[in-house]
Every structure is written in C-alpha cells, then in structure tokens.
Image (tube, rainbow, N blue to C red; front, top):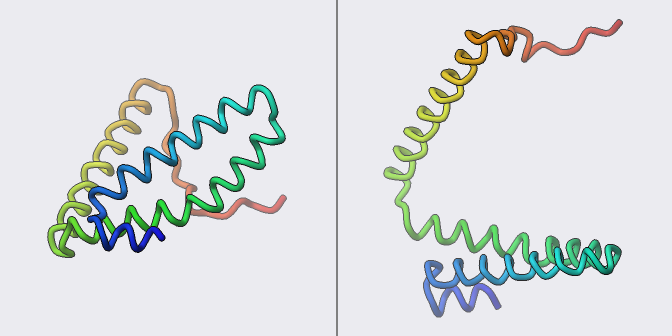
Length: 113
C-alpha cells in the first residue's frame, strides 16, 4: 500500500504525511499512557512494529530520490568532518576546564580481575 502511494505520488509528498501520521499516533499513545499504561505499551509495540519499517523505507526512498550518490557522498563527508571537529573541540574544552579526563583506553577491553 505504501509503495503504491510512493509510486503514485512522490516520496517528497508521502514521507512528510507519513511522519505526521506516525507522530500523531505516538502522541495518542502518550495520552493513553496516563489512563491505561498496559494498553499504551501494547499500542507502542504495535506502532513500532507496523510503522517503523514503513517509515524507514519511505525515508530512504526520499533520500534516494533527492540525492545522487556523488553529491550525497560529499555532503555526508563534510558533515562527518564538522561533527568530528565539534566533538574534539567540546572534549578539549572539558579537559581544559578540568571537567573530564583524556581517555586513552576507549578501545581496550576491560581487564579481568
């Protein structure tokens, strides 16, 4: 059903509507949670199981339609470099202020005592 909608209309029109519908369903589950937590838990499980794969698939259909591989690769690479620079700057700021330590053992397994 979702694939027919995406074929009939573009992913650019279907994905925002699907996100809005999913968000409305999650808000409804949140509201039900106050009165009937067990019902809300079941509804959240069903929502995640039914909507999750469809939303992810539709999102990637939109991404595949909007970006060609070469421009997407450049954009993702630039975004990763910016993210790494911000992370390094934040870590260095915390260390300089005495709020953190430099960790050198991030990749080493825990020692077995």
